[in-house]
Image 1 (cartoon, each protein chain N blue to C red):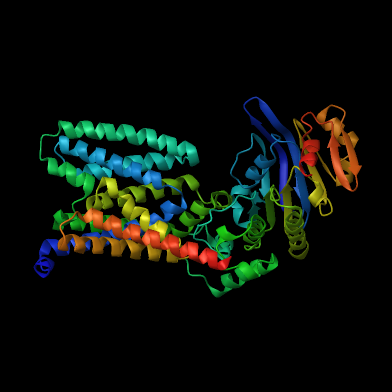
Image 2: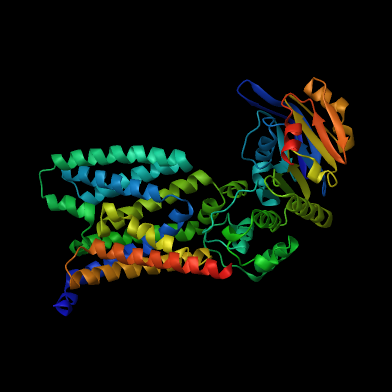
Amino acid sequence: MSVVSVEHLGLRFGDRVLWDDLSFELERGEFLAVLGPNGTGKTSLIRILLGLLKPTAGRVGVNGRPAAESRSQVGYVPQQRVFDRDVTLRARDLVRLGLDGHRFGFGRLDTESRIRIDRALRAVGASAYGDAAIGRLSGGEQQRLRVAQALVAEPALILADEPLLSLDLAYQQAITGLLDEHRRRSGTAVLFVTHDINPILGYVDRVLYLAPGHWAIGAPDDVLTSETLSRLYGTDVDVLNVRGRIVVVGTPDDQHVHHVEHEH
Amino acid sequence: MFTDLLAQHFVHTALIAGAVVAVVSGAIGVFVVLRGASFAVHAISELGFTGAAAALVIGLDPVIGMIGGSLAVGGVLGVLSLRGRERDSAIGAVLAFGLGVGVLFLSLYQGYATQATNLLFGSIVGVSDRQLLELVIVSLIVMLGIAVLFRPLLFSSVDPEVAAARGVPLRALSVAAFLLLALTTAEAIQVVGVLLVLTLVITPAAAAQHFTTRPLRAIAYSVAIALISTEGGILLSLLKSWPTSFFISAISFAFYLAARIVSARGRAGAA
């Protein structure tokens, strides 16, 4: 059984059609990148898979059940958002919330939970600062803890929404490496939303490209081609390989070129 | 003189009432600080004042009006679940109008003006046995609410996005948090008055967050600071007949200053 099944999914906001008849499946241990310009519903797709947004048409299943019933099977890594300096939360408290934060009461931490939290901290290389106040850690350290928080409940699926945004290159590689290592070891499927494929290109199995009104899915070499993207956008688009980096030129908003320039 | 006062029944009542209010205020304050909702506390207490003034005009118990006004504002703020600047300006606008209406009600009220003064500045020594019982019951409700909702409330306060992804109902929790806050505020008004509610609901929690990095300890420290401030304030006002509210706010502010200094030292030492 697939970890994620998306069948004939449609989403529209008023007159604006984001996608029609979007279908794909995600298998155990698979790493899928969801790419595309702003406003094509990348984050909406994650919200639908979390059962927080109702699609206009079609349906999704996570481990064969409706999304809203499968949240305990899903780990979520959001965009990096810096915590207040003085927030009274330690690194391990943040990770713990991913395990039992949705339950009522104070909840005594039993030995098994403690072991799981320590294991998650170790898995992301954060054991050294497990007892540190979260607000005093760097953005990259906080984002490592986000990954630990997402995998502490041993989910079947990890949904990551632009988790590398505003991180420097070393941390981008570290975070991606952690997710890759985890899915290989434990078979967790990863759906990774990003506007820049380059930091994760070496890890992804398939790419789902969302363009305004159209989409394509397949291996990176098949989707990220001038031919496919020109067809998706309905205009001439060039996909260039510049020193091992993929650069897309000629999309209507030219976001990728814009982005690449910003990195210098 | 002082020891004579300590033997008085009304002093015992005041000390117990103060303790009850301090415990809930200190506890809920931690969540208020985590959610960055200090300004909302101010709004809830001033609209509690409007409710109390309205009750006086129509001849009801002002405490009932106060709880009604606080709950109404708390409920609305919770349902709207506004964040950041949008919330600040909305609260400011509503607060100003509500206070204006309260002033109108007070001018319409023909009874004793001390009632109004007590609302604004507190009247802990005037608490009756029946009021004390009410305070205890409301406090138990709030403490029970905090105990049951502790983890999802913490989760949704510090990390709303991931909490939502885990199925925590953010809006329902926001409503619950603001209703608990409204009940607490209505209690604190009776001790320190509308204008000084923040001294019990915000200051102890703001100080506590500099002494610890752990959520449950923050609650324990905040409650302790609120307790010391309230009981100390009541006792000092017996010694020297300055207003109780002044002493309470002075002690809790001293804790806050000390916390800032300790925290600044700690940071400098770590660097």
